[in-house]
Image (cartoon, rainbow, N blue to C red; front, side):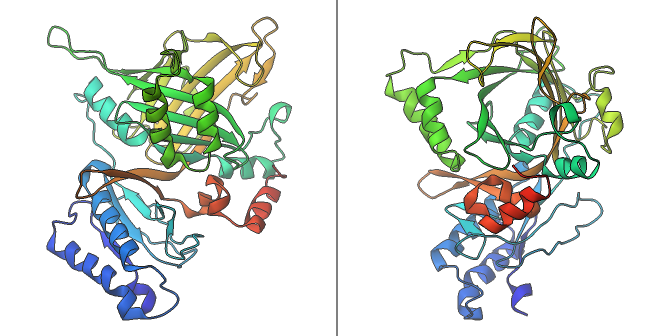
Length: 398
């Protein structure tokens, strides 16, 4: 039938070079002719873009299989037992086919990266961090459960609704935006993260990877926030601002004593919160982080002139991101932000970033939704007004 014809699957091991996948891609390119129905409204040029994206996404470095269906909403495909299940179809794109201004809506099933006892080196950790520490994450499902349990934010013991967007700048840097209530224009924190691997010494390698945190030049921050719903533009904005030379060389400012250290191993005390969650904490599919200095006192980005003592622990899985970030008054010890029961924010993966390479050597970043139930949290273009209202009411309003 029409819908089964419109499903394209590119194997994570095959890619465009595999004969079977070439045939599937040819089928996709032929669909506008075969179907001749308004349900399939993608132009041939966009068919080519989707085919290239799927072929690129299927390469082993992403550890994923991608499936794509036009205008088939609310349906899920169960993958083979050996591959983690994570598939959702559909799009609220104005094209009706999973495309929205170069954002490709697909579903991904990921294959965990293996890491045994002898594979805890910084190179392995950095590779896993580059793979996992990108895309979009959101804790909406956690907030829904909080409200069902009668837990409200702050003094109520519950969590605020937050979203995290991590946009790659190569393999060793990220632009990171955090915003409230599924509204990209409500950014409360914008950072630049730099991944740092210690060089090998005397034939030994470090068993961790550090991450430096930076704030952004005010003018750069303003430009990025003006395009808050277009994160695919952030790398270009960052690059143009850096090359413009009108910033006195101070594009980034290091946050002293805020370095984060990533490892495959948990800290028995600082990551004790994982005991309350159903996660596989084996070394084969996760990373954990602590602050190198334990804590730090920094200037508040929300309240200029105010100091905050911060503490933070992190845990990162292929499909979830735990953030145990708390801020206190340095003098009184009073809570300023964070969960007052010290239960971390659990954010589910919403999207991945992939890169499409064209014949001219140009690259196009594409954000691929892997959990359509949370796609609406990425901005107004990914939802209707009524949908946002309904979702917000489930958690007591934004």
